[in-house]
Length: 191
Image 1 (cartoon, rainbow, N blue to C red):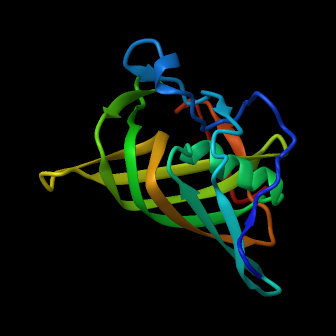
Image 2 (cartoon, rainbow, N blue to C red):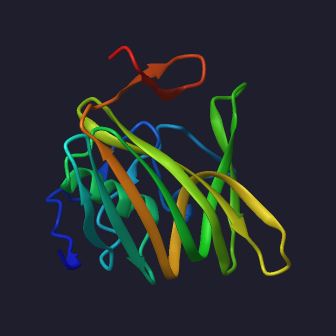
C-alpha cells in the first residue's frame, strides 16, 4: 500500500480535548491550562501509510512535512482512523515548538518556547479517548545546535523539514477520566 494523502477529517475549527494544544500566540502569559483546545486541520502535508495490520494491532507511518503542526495532525489522524488506544514514537526536526512542564500546585503547564530549528531527538506518546473523542498526549526532547536539550509536554511543534511518527493502534480502547487533583484527564484502565 503506497502513501496517500490523508482525507479531511470533516471536523472544522477546534476540538476540545483534555490534553491539547493551542497556538503559542493565543496563550496569555506563561501558563497553559491542561484543557487547552487542539486546533485541527493544521497539518495539510501529513501523509499516512498502513505498514502492519494484524488481528491485535495496526501500525501506521504518519509522515509530516514542512509547516505541518504535529499535535493537530496527530489529532486529525486519530479522528480519521477512529483511534481509541495507541502509542507512538517519532523523530525528525522542527523549526520551533512549545513544550511545558506541569505545575501540580497550580494545575497549569508552564510554557517553554523553543524559537529555533531543533532536532526531535525523541517523541513519545499515547492516544486514549475522553467523552468518545481521541486525546493525544505527547512528550518531546529537542536537541539544539549547541548540543543542549529541552523537553516537556508537547503543545505545539512546526515541522521542518520532516517528522516521522510510527503509531501502533490497539483494538481495545482506553478511556481517560478527569483527575481533580491535577486538573488533567488521565487513563483509567478499569474503563
